Length: 230
Ligand code: 13P
Image (cartoon, rainbow, N blue to C red; front, side, top):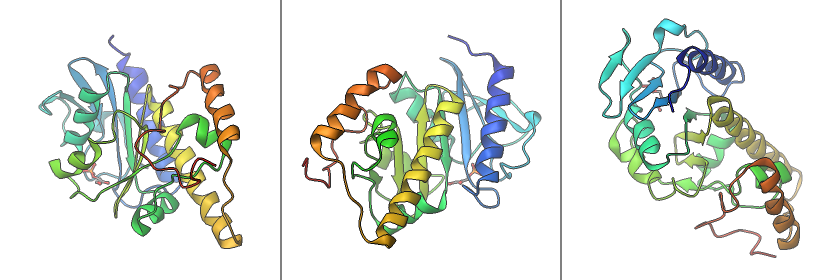
């Protein structure tokens, strides 16, 4: 189904501004895209600050990354965005940024695989740490490919974070949820310990997903839970 381009542009510019204003990126970092239809994607330009983008800076590419419309060069991560749309028909937006707490975990080599906070368990499940791949190359998506079917949020080792969603605001909100969860977990660790919810408490939260339209198996596969399923 073709999305309304005017409203996609508005949502991408808003998500870019929030990404920049909340300090999820520095300088020209980060990129955000939205699926327009089965043949095209709207994406941010390479090398421009997400805090100051205008509608005319955005670019439309086809599913092979060829320019359809726009006067700038598309993000150097366009290949990663397009591969995600190809593997996940339910995904209509991809957000990539470098939020400090989530990226701190990604640099420390620690996945967010503990069942700690109700909202995070419902919206994301666990967040895997994807192995390092050079930015702007096919290598980056190669590492994500293994996880993309089962998760909506990812820590990219020594790089940053990635979220996907059924709309721009949904994908962006997952980035906020991820960063907030990483920050809280970091603070709890400084205070002494990160207490996890037990299996019964976790299952009750997973059951609530139906109410919020979240896939029951999202973010629960392949990651060894660090609470040991207690
Ligand atoms: P682009 O400016 O090419 O989108 O790259 C920014 C970035 O954060 C790469 O990881």
